[in-house]
Length: 230
Image (cartoon, rainbow, N blue to C red):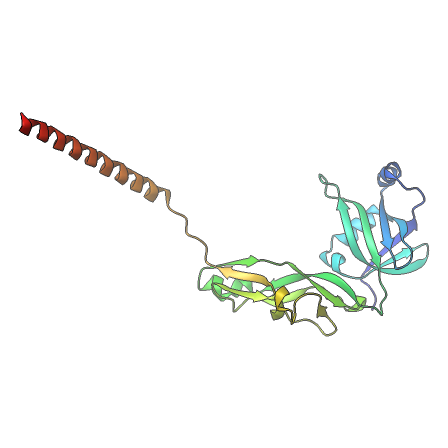
């Protein structure tokens, strides 16, 4: 299965922070390819990487990297970004064998929220508890996303990992028949009503008036008692 993502790379000759800084100035992003035997330090054009990584599917699909005319199939392992500019400063890949299963996180896609019973009829709110699920499959069988239909979800109801339908050849890493890991991924709940400020003020005023009247009554009783003794 051909990958929809392709990157060209060159071998990185100089290592270290200073060298990495110089590479970035030349629009080259340092990267590492982790393999079963050897790791490779490489450089990727920043413009090419930015364009490819702008697609959300880039993060859960097989990527073809050509390193000095040699093609390697990889999946994304880790991404480091500039905390202020959010651009990629370093990226790690994991080399994969198309004939061996791998564990990968796949994003969850919630569908039919606009027609969800709990929202449309009961006035509830949908809470996304889990946004990605770890699955095991061959590199060529990695799904773009896992769809979860919430159309029939009502107030105080939830869907779990076991409710997700997996494509053929794809298995859960955790979940499935394992009840311990069959966690909720989405829930519909009724929002807590906020106390109206005016009502609070009225209640406070009523309490103050009642307290004042009580004090007045006590003062009157004491005065009457003194007068009766005189």
